[in-house]
Image (cartoon, rainbow, N blue to C red; front, side):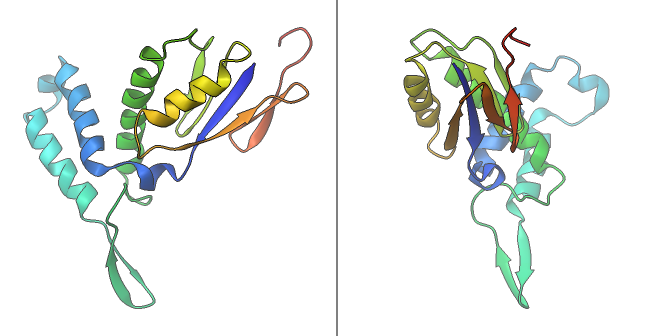
Length: 160
């Protein structure tokens, strides 16, 4: 059964500290980091925290600070959000106790996968419980069409 998942308010639901932790995990695993910069992963993460926590904006002449999530207009947000989601999905997929999806395809905050009938509800429960900050809207295939990326993916009779 084809199922799609759409993260609700993706950028603003990702906690900056969690995003920095995900980036640090990737930086620490990168054996070639020293060839590209003299900065340590700790130094890079300190700079990244500064970028993610200084989220001020104006509205109707008043200054505000965004208190939760990654700012949608920040150039670093798409990168850190993607790394956070990669960490999230690895955890969700590796800890699902039932038959795993037959493929998991994600683009930013939208994903789709194939699941055995009867498993989709349990899998939705699992991905919704991995991180209280990340909540999903779920779509299922109807009449050979599956909602994905604000459009529809059609599956033909021959499977193509």
